[in-house]
Length: 222
Ligand code: BTN
Image (cartoon, rainbow, N blue to C red; front, side, top):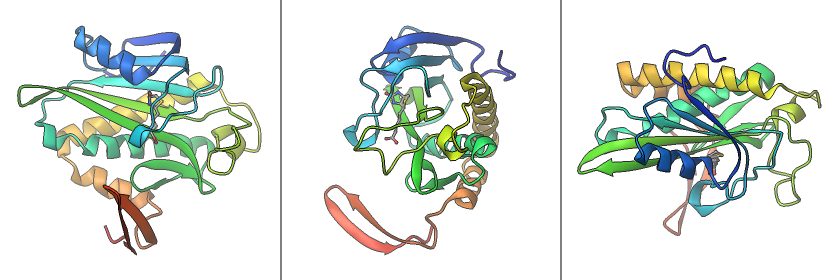
């Protein structure tokens, strides 16, 4: 079904899981190869960044985690998350042309979050053993729970309510991900960072960030 070279040659399609990131990590530990994708219909304990949870109802959206085994030292891995941000943003733009990126790596449209990315790694000695790249993309959700109603959206909502074929979004996403990960592997972080900035709304804007409990105000320059 996919038209990719190495990503998603094997797709494990699951029903309801706790978290596709946890599934992917345990399958990676059991030897699942580079490029394996774990896809679930729903999650009961979908994980977001900073210990938050990820709204993961059945039937509507994409919840997936890719197992990546790249020959990188651990400090060189973070741009993978930016590459995924660019790939998700370009995927979203097919259905929601106004989609963009917001620091640190949210994909949004109409100032509401469409997708999130959670990267987890496991090391062996001082080497990176596996990167689990987890992506949640809201495709067809029409009504979000009250705590998310003002801050989340879906491709369907961005398109005025027309239902969207989840598999078509999946195929597009895997293609974009493979392209940007290959680009990162071949050319290093510079092209990825440039592409990320081109799609970002944050650069030049005033923003407030909280790091380790400290709040900083400023203008995002880079
Ligand atoms: C964020 O907080 O923005 C990151 C959200 C990441 C959610 C995805 S859904 C698929 C994968 N499995 C998880 O448990 N989390 C990620």
